Image 1: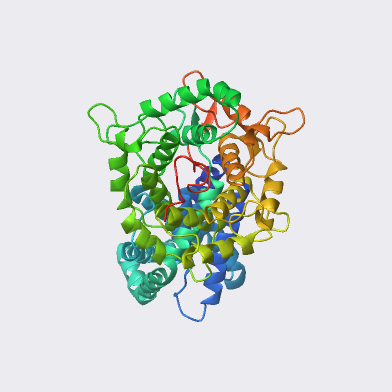
Image 2 (image 1 turned 60 degrees about the horizontal axis):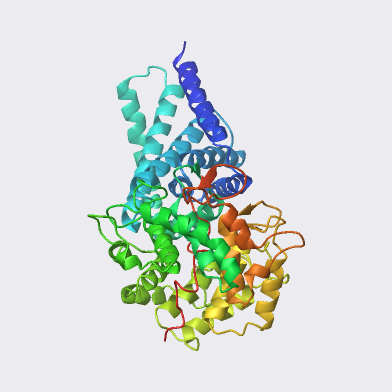
Amino acid sequence: MSWELGSFAVLALALAAGFAWWERRRPSSHVLALVATLAALAALGRVAFAPLPNVKPTTDIVLLSGFALGPAPGFVVGALAALASNLVFGQGPWTPWQMAAWGLAGVGGGLLGALTGRRLARAPLAAACGAAGLVYGAILDYSTWATFSGAHTFGQYLVISGSSLPFNLAHAIGNVVFCLAFGPAFARALLRFRARFEVRWVSAAPQAPAVVLALALGAALAVGGAAPDRARAAGPTARAQAYLLRAQNLDGGYGAAPRARSSDLYSAWAAIGLAAARSDPDRVRRSGGRSLGAYLSASARRARDAGSMERTMLALRAAGRSSRSLHRRLRRAHRRDGSFGGLTNLTAFGVLALRAAGDRPSSRRVRRAVGFLLRRQNRDGGWNFALRGAPSGVDETAAALEALRAARRARGSRAMRRGVRWLVRRQERDGGFPLRPGAPSNAQSTAWAVQGLLAAGRDVGRVRRRGSRSPLGYLRSLVGRDGAVRYSRAGAQTPVWVTAQALAALHRRALPVRGG
């Protein structure tokens, strides 16, 4: 077998294995669309910077895609970007090598994201992009040596590498500059998309996540309905509260499931849910361990993005602890258009966090954020998490209603009436609410809908379609004997990840945002 044939055989196996890996993941249509868009963007970046020899943002886009979405999506973005861009630059024996090299950059980005928890400062991220450029150059040098060299000696490889060194250095330096310019912002945008599209599943018995418990528990306890309705809820609610208390770790925090590693995300949800159940998070602790309130104070130092700051501020408010440092940092994240991150959900929770920290409804920041929310309301009365005119969602609409009410918008205002009307019409026959119209009901979206309707002054015990039960009845039906709350009625499967960054677990009793 010749060098050329052997090299291409190994290369073909590597590419086949990479695409098979991607197929086995069974990505959703949302992720497929995002990966296709990123591949097109990476290819366009190569074409746009063609006049500058070997200076292009393609490697950065591929690595950052892997960093935010994972190794398999990163590989596919890189491989497709090489294949698509060579429709312009010309296909040849170099194409599969470029596909493999950029695919490897995506895999490296995915591994880097996994090792760092997808939290990396601008300079180290830029250094990684520069290193990826050098690795890419080394692989292409090898392809030239394997495909077009006759002797295949090490000396010949050194000659090829030496002649291409200026181009490889230009590639690496360009990668560093591009990443310093847009890398962190690009990664944060992808992470927000990932947060909307990704749901992971584990067995619900006995490992139901603390988050779903907190959502359903808070929704049930925040209701000011009739006494018989509360009495019927007491059994399941008490079991859920007990389960949530048992799930705490010795460091004071909560993981995605009992005995799982503590996470700032899940710990904040647990604090909000327990506060709604009249359990002071500052006193919730296992024997010999730290309190949940202490864990939350420590997590405040780790909060960097607007969503983390908002969620932690609300949890600290539920625990009766100060959030002054986060308050100052969140104010700096407030954009001129009134939004936080340009997103509906982040802006809604920004209003709630500002109010929890003491900002008055008449304050300039609260008024600007509310103005952004009002401009983003769709014609059908609902809200989309990112764009006006895009399909409305239950979670975003509920969050917007809570924010408007926290800003002292009248419950009878036109915006709130339209939002409530859209939300009520989304109820399914089982009493629950779906994430999107046409999807099955789930515990999280139902709990969030309950909170939005409560904010609008609706009696959620009376919200029901003809012949159906109330959303509270749906939530009670999901509480198991051990207190674990299933995500849906579809089976013994419960999601580990919670949709929409601190959306549905807000409770009237847990978060008295009337302060100030």
